[in-house]
Amino acid sequence: MSNSFTSPYPSPLKGEGAIINMLSKTFQALSDPSRQKILELLKKKDMAVSEIAKSFDFTLPTLSHHLNVLKQAELVTAERHGQEIIYSLNLSVFEEVSKLLIKFFSYKNLKNK
Image (cartoon, rainbow, N blue to C red; front, side):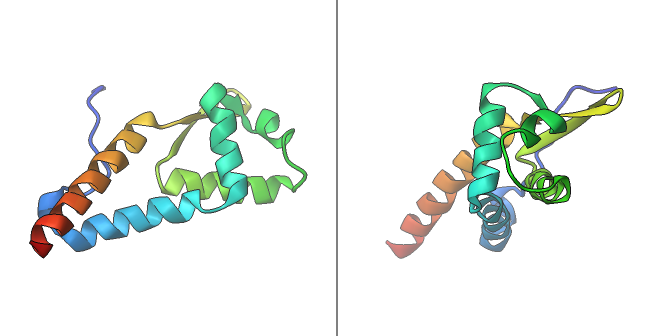
């Protein structure tokens, strides 16, 4: 089993549209205050769904939806430990998004000169 990480995000060389699509997916996931709160919780430590649920008043299916949106954007990872699913931040994705934002805006600035 390989430990190498392959970025789920497109190379900036593939075109501006792919970068915008990836950033849009990420920003959509980050746009909801509940998902922001989930990320704040996970910033402190990895947590089981049951532990995350204690911080919210909504149902488990609603929490599951929010976690799935974050997983689809690859902002969090989930790992099963026996009966529990443990969620954690995917910090490499935040780093990749930061790099793509810098490249995107650098590209836009070069294009406008």
